[in-house]
Length: 419
Image (cartoon, rainbow, N blue to C red; front, side):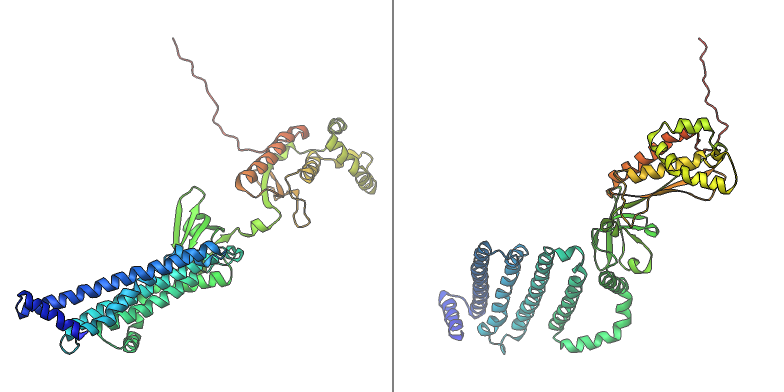
């Protein structure tokens, strides 16, 4: 190399340059040559390796090579080649004892560049690992993005220490020991990140929430599907298509409702109440019983309960057993029968379906429909719930029942304009 340096120096001298310009031309030529060699080496390495990877990916069914190509891992590795050539080649072209500052500066820049490209390559590789993981079914239940980010933070922390040590020409271990004195300040600066890290790990280990879950968090005015969970934030798409975000540690420090098990259950709960006017509840007369028996479903209910009613009347020594039939009681049994035969109501052993009476209030007698819809999707669920309640309201008139509602003093008026 030194002979090559001598030949260049002789060439510039023979051309007519003085000693200063000859040395400057020699140095510039060596630097340009080194950059040119590193540039050519970059493209050769990238072309050979990338072409080989593409050729292999087309012949194999594995997704690893496709993910590495997609995340440009080979391209990032190729960038380390010119950095290494410049880092080691500069000392061969320029004697260190004669060019200490210049060689030191170039090696510092090349060293920082190589460490940076190593970090970029590791980042791309970890992204490729995450892409591959998402292709497995287990990724729907267990997310590793938090752990990937944790590994990235570790690598970038170590890389940052190395870069600073290169720039300051210090031992990396001494810098790490010096950070101990700044631990309190660092914990204050990265408080949210540390809390988010702990919350993300706990949420993942305990399987509290994952992307795709429907959650409700009233304290954050959030109700929708989880889009993303990172170390710092949780992103949720609400049902009105707005996006809410809140700190990850809120998953641990605050309460929220996760509707994930709704998909695994046999049905989605329906609880709606009909308030009955208490003054419309009465014992049924014989004429009313005869009228209700014209309804096949009600006739079947009355026939099934005749024996029970007769036994109760005999025990109480009452001759007229019609007293035990109330229009509300028959209506309640009718709704139970209606729910039992409704095709969209879940009838599994774990799902209860009934109409039950709640505590009476000034608003009336609340009769609550309690059942589970087979359909869990929001639109279909609401449609089934509405159809059940519409049928119940329409059937009340046949049982001479009135829905309780607040009476207002406002009456509609019609104003006639005088011509």
